[in-house]
Length: 55
Image (spheres, rainbow, N blue to C red):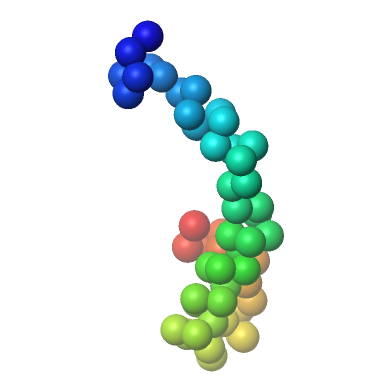
């Protein structure tokens, strides 16, 4: 199969093992960004609800 064709997912499989961000890192990045932009809303509603409403 030619490199770069639509059906070649081998790079995706390899990159996941190479150190993709963990769920905790992703959640922290999103909540940090949201908290800095909307501190009042964040503290009243909380991170889990915000993540489910704004995926």
